Length: 269
Ligand SMILES: Cc1cc2nc3c(=O)[nH]c(=O)nc-3n(C[C@H](O)[C@H](O)[C@H](O)COP(=O)(O)OP(=O)(O)OC[C@H]3O[C@@H](n4cnc5c(N)ncnc54)[C@H](O)[C@@H]3O)c2cc1C
Image (tube, rainbow, N blue to C red; front, side, top):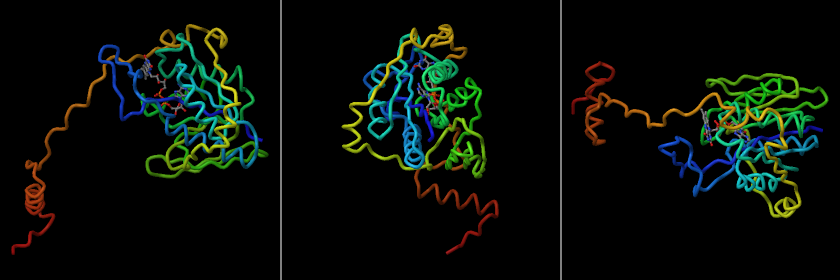
């Protein structure tokens, strides 16, 4: 048996993403929301591990009440239950406060886990920090950029392949452990009708700050030592060597430059 927690963030569809120019926060109102793509990969991997060894898969999320839709989607993929941490006190959290909140819920409700799976990154704020900070809060090891996982429940270990700087690293590590997973690990399944019907009976437990307890000053804005000072587009790149905007002329210019540098020999017709 392998008990797994998958941390799932509901994110705005980035194609529709807007930033509030005054508060510098992501504007979520009116923007369609989806399950963060890396987290769907995490759910799929958890399901494959459960199909092999049994166990329980809990989906954990911090977000507004509408994040229930994301949890429902994960339940209808075949996971067992879900916990949504939702309260105004949790709002405006940076990654440290987010990790504190998620880690606190894990200690309170699912401390018997073998694996925690997070996405490598969320496509909205995209820091890639939350999973690692959860592992630190729980004082367990973590492995990031995971592209392949083998679990050995009897030996209480995982063997993981991770992609770093174009290289593949294979690491054996003890469980419990937190993994951050990325594209290429698997192809997430679509919910099927049987699971959708079954998921209607599954529990999404909504937990507020009072129920979660702990140090309330470590949640949300109060618990966030960092904040967004400014949001701005990167400065445009200075023009390159090729001056012409027309493809045909650009090619001639490039050929001339390469010929001048004696990198090619220009054939004279
Ligand atoms: C300096 C700073 C200030 C911010 N201020 C605000 C603010 O005022 N208001 C606001 O709405 N947001 C704010 N954010 C965004 C907020 O901190 C992030 O949404 C959140 O902390 C997750 O960070 P991320 O999106 O970079 O996730 P990543 O670290 O890229 O996510 C990695 C993985 O962690 C897990 N994960 C991340 N977030 C959650 C979650 N909520 N529930 C479950 N799993 C999760 C997922 O598995 C995800 O794939 C701020 C971020 C920063 C860096």
